[in-house]
Length: 286
Image (cartoon, rainbow, N blue to C red; front, side, top):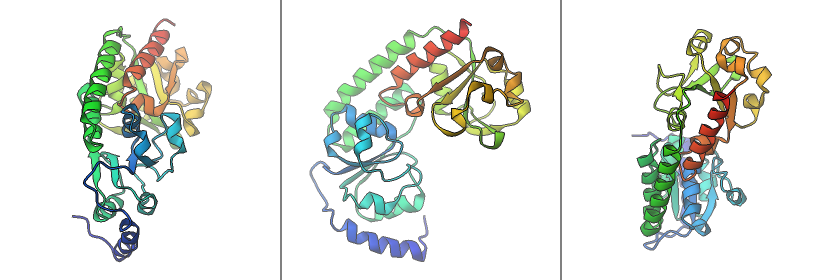
């Protein structure tokens, strides 16, 4: 059980004023805050975007979602920001935080629906079903799940295994390589695209030693296409002493993809599988 500090108790009292303006409803929610890019994509795919009043920072697709008020990053939500839009439902991916904020929001008597995470076909369909149930549109969700499931099956069946060893690099802050091991979205999408995760000796996202990078011998480096260390040109990337020793450096083989498309495991995952498999096939031909 989370123990609230005096500051948090005071914050809860202040936020109760905002929450009091939100009546409890028995009918389907009409003022929804969507937290998590995968959830927001599903809401739009269900045609229920008219009920959204805000979204979190990771909710960057479809582009029109960017016009909604931003209540912060999924793991660093502001309770004041969420409650300021007077929601009657908070629809969130699993893992939102910090825990104190989630506790405050739950105590504000606003329905809080959590959508389970996961990196499989079944997990994607479960996310769609959970969003549909929360929005009281199970029929729409069933139809969307059938469509996305069929699209994913077609995408995966069309993949020709590339045999490429792929190293997903989450970040390189301070020259330290943070890579994606097993039981991650990165590992799952690499395998769906017919390749092998070069970092398969650990779970989660962890920093690698230079020796571990050299031993992994990746054929391709996979990264999110974003600013910061990920924006470095290939030459800068392969100037790293450990990466310089890899087959990926010899082939100048780097694939960059939109982070939510690549790792979101939502309605666009069939597209992500095709895109990644195609990029890996290109490098396999070099």
